[in-house]
Image 1 (cartoon, rainbow, N blue to C red):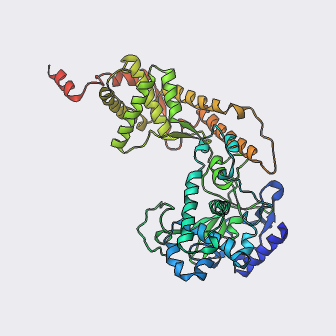
Image 2: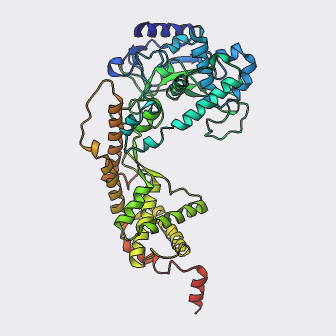
Image 3: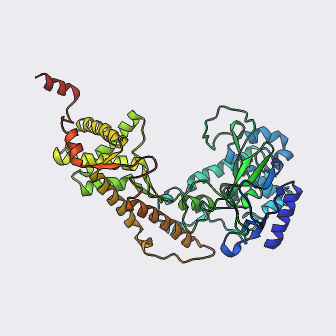
Length: 488
């Protein structure tokens, strides 16, 4: 069956399943620009128009599938699985065991699992080590998740055996990986009407069993035909009692593509999860600066020794537990908007002040207990400083230098022009990710938005003014020693 025939049969199947589709949209072939099947406006569409309506009977999930129809005795057991385990299990059963007899066969035929000629699995879990190396220096290389994926699939194998599904005992690891990747790329979390356990946290984990969850991970035919784009997003899925409705969230002109969104992800994460990139960059792009890079900057460019910086970070880890504030983290995000997370500014400000104190009263070789007293006092002063909307001038210098040092890791992409390609290869997608991260760093290094955000517009004070205030008292004396000194 060719591409067009599969599309026609899929659309016919949708109609037979009582899916209501507006006559203002149709599924079209966009393989010429590397986007497979897509939903296109055939007439002008206004804001808040319903584009299609999906009845719940068409959803494929833990409560609606052939497995529990064939084996009703397994229904409660399936609902007792985690979201991922349950959907992988029922999807593989539907795809591999039911095959051509499955109610969802015409749907599977337009998905990557059955249309391998026109779709690739390009999520990072399928990349070779050599291909992953093309993404360095992006930190996404540390978050591919192969080991956790293997552990999940091993659990699914154990479920297959314990549930006695003999037809799947010899299912290949590649088949399980493809099912999991398909779910990562195509599934939706659909709100449930009445979950059995209503005492879940607002942001619950995928490890919560289906029965106790407020949502159910589902495959939604046609809804997943929409391509996603953070900049082109013009339609969203709305929940109704018995249906899900795709509705326009802005005007869409005739001939334009209807786009959904996969939430606010940078290109690196879009590639990891979904296997594609936005060539012009995602609205949510960011680059990361590691804590190690910040530590190295201060030990190499200020009077703070490397061992002292290590001591400072160890003490700050204790402080953040005491204060229930997390600011010492593995890496800090710098966004393509030109803004950086508060924690980056705070940590660099804190280290900047401590370096200034070390210039006046060196404490590189002081005892850890003595350092701890001083650092706790400086922590409070710096927090008050930022809360008042102020930073020091040396902070501005240091943070820009740190960002530019991180930019130097991207030298291979800095001056390289990206060649326009209709269908991006994996090396080309890697370059898009690196360019996206470089652009985020460049925007932050400009400084325009780094210190002026919607939440706060920082002003700058001389470092000596703050240091003079802090050093009025001996930072390293404990409170009892201070009292004795006062009493004398």
